[in-house]
Each structure stands twice: as structure tokens, then as C-alpha cells.
Amino acid sequence: MTPDDALPLLTAAVDGELTPAEAEAVRALLADSSSAWHTFRNLRADRQRLQQLTPVAPPADLHARIMARLPAHPPTPVEVARPVSPSRKMSLVPVGLAASVLVAMAGASFTFFVNRPNGGPSTHGALLAKANPKRDGEWAKLLPRDAAPPSSSPAPIEPIPEPVAAVEAQVSPELAPEPRAVVRDVLTFPPVPAVGKLDLARVRVPFLATVAEFDREDVQQQFVSELRQDLAFRIDLFARDPARGVELFQAAAKGTGLNLLVDRTTAERVQRKQAAAYLVYTDSLTATDLRDLLVRLATADAKAPSKTFEAVHTTAAVPADGRDLRELLGTDPGLWKRPMTTAEPKSVSSDTVNQLTRNLTDPKGKGGDRLAVLTTYAPREVRTVPGRSAEVRQFFERRGDRRPTAVPVLVVVRQANG
Image (tube, rainbow, N blue to C red):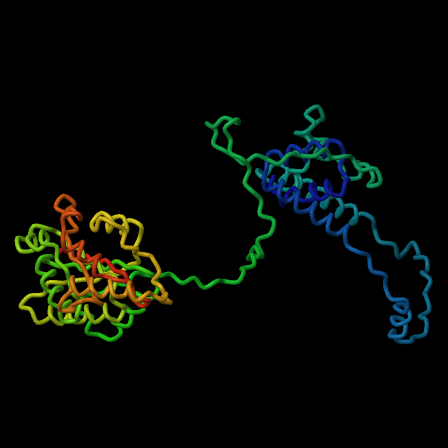
């Protein structure tokens, strides 16, 4: 039985007008057919919504308004039927013959629908006969609808469990899947949660450019802006030949007035090309001085027969850079130490001692303000011992106080990947 054929039976079940036999048939139908179960549930939901509707009273003047619109006609006299004389009565023989033909056609139609497979009006009676096998099947089919109890005493219907979805025959009931979830509202989309105010997050990206790009003003400005965001920096100069890169850096430093003290052992390794990376430390140049140094370095590299430098990578110094610097120089140069902004008054004797020291260590007065030191950085096995380097000791003796605008930097000339 399809849900459409069983619709009268399901409607009676929702209204509570089933006999005990019909209630048992409805339970069997809902247990076997998921479509019948959905139809029954929809009918029951409609009944509940109708019961929840608020009754509306008609307007008080509704009757008066309807009567006012009706046309006024005089009452039509009623004619009294006169008795028909016996001579005018119809013969009952044709009427009886027509009734016999009608009964025969009705019986043939009923037999046809009873024996028709999969449906028809006889399915209702077949369910009643199947639900009560002890009752004679023919009487169950012919059971009139008037035999059901009146609507004032409906038969109770026990709660019917949800039907289990049909599975293959070889799967046991214990392994059957769970019933499919019922979507009760498919006409709307779930509300979108409220999104709070978005905050603008600025991500700092390290400066990265090629040495050849330092002939552009925008690259120079970006480099200077980067050096003004922290106290100390590390600048990696990637070169195809680190030894040749150190020679070009020495020439550029001399052109900008930077006195570069080269460790003697490091100078020998530069000539023999025995190191993979070299380190230059200075804390006497400002951001613009470092920019001019790289601009001069880019100009010298562009004039060479073959380019030596590739990229310039600038990042803020990290604690690992401070540890490497202490190991290379033998002491902590105060990488993140803020310079003194106000000078304390000094006595005449102390200033005289400082002046004599500068005259003895730097008689020609070169590089007193701009000083740097060059030493071997990698590999670690060929680094110079700081206590044995006269140039490292000389750097600390002559460097003096750091200017407020100076930026401590570690410039590492290292082997490029390509």
C-alpha cells in the first residue's frame, strides 16, 4: 500500500477515529513503510498547527452587512404537490431492471479492484484482514465504515517508533545504520555569527635587496627606514667570492672615511681565500652613513669586470649574534646598550689623559670617530683568538663613546648559494 492509498486510513488515525483492528493495521503499515511514516508525521504536525491557531470572532455587524447587500424580493409562494393519479404512475418494471443492471456493474467493479495487484480501494480491507487473521477475509473487505466507533470515543494509538532505514538483506539488524537525520527547515540559511571589529596588524618584513639596486632612491630610503626601527642590526652581504667581497668593502670603507682595522691573521686568509665568511663590526656609523657605504660598494661592484655581490639581507640583531660577537671580540661591546644622550662634566686632568692616549694610539688623527674591525667569521675553526689580535685590542682602545645616532651593526660578507 502506498501512502496515497492509505491516506484515508492515516487521516482517521490522526483524528483518533480508528477501530482496534484499524489501529493495529496502521501500526503494521508505519513499521513497514518509511514513506507512510513521513505522511503520518506530516498529517499529525498539520493537526497540531491547526489546533494552535487562535480562533477569530466575526465582526458584530457581519450579519447586518450581508443582509443589506441582498436584493429585496417578495416571498415566492410555495406550491403544494398534488397527488398523482394511479393512471399517471410510472411502471415499476423498467426501474427494477435498471436497478438490477446497476447492482451487477457495481459487483463486477468491486471484484476487479479487489483482485487487482498493488493497490486499489481494496488495500484498506486487505490490511484489516492481515491485521486480524482470525476474521473471515471477505467480511473484512466488506466491513462498512459505519461499524467504526463514533468519533466521541476514539481508539487510543500507542506511540510508534521511528522506522529503521531499509538495508541489504545480508546485513544483520544489529549492524544496521542509524536513521537518516530529518531536516526540518530547508528554506533558510543558518544566521551568520556577528563579526567583531577587525584590527589592522602590521607585519614587519626584513629588508632584502640586491647590491646593484642601491643606485635607486626608493631602495636607499627603505634601507634607512629599516635601520631606524631597532637598536642593533645584522647585515649579510652575499658574494660569489667572499675574499673579493672583503677587498671591495675595504675600498668602499676607505672612500667613506671609515677606518677599518683588519686582523692580521684574517688578512692572510683573505689573500689565500681560506675562509667562507668574514665579519665587520662597527658602532660609529649612522643609518645614512651605512647607506652611503653600500651605495659606494654597489658603484665599485658595477665597475668591476664581473659582479661579486648579489643580495643584501638586513635584520635586527638577535641574542645569537651577541654571543658570536662576544666570542669573536673577546668581550661584550654593548650591542644593545643605549648611548649617553647627555654628557657628564669631566675634569681637566681626565680630558688631558684621553687626549694623550688618542695622540699616542692615533698620531695622524685618522679614524678617531669612524672605526671598525674585520675578523674571520666562518668556519669557526679558523677564527682568531681575540686575545692574540692586536687589531681587536686597538679597536676597543680607540672606539670611544658611541654617538646617539650611531647604529651598531654586524656586517657579514659570506658565500652566496649560487
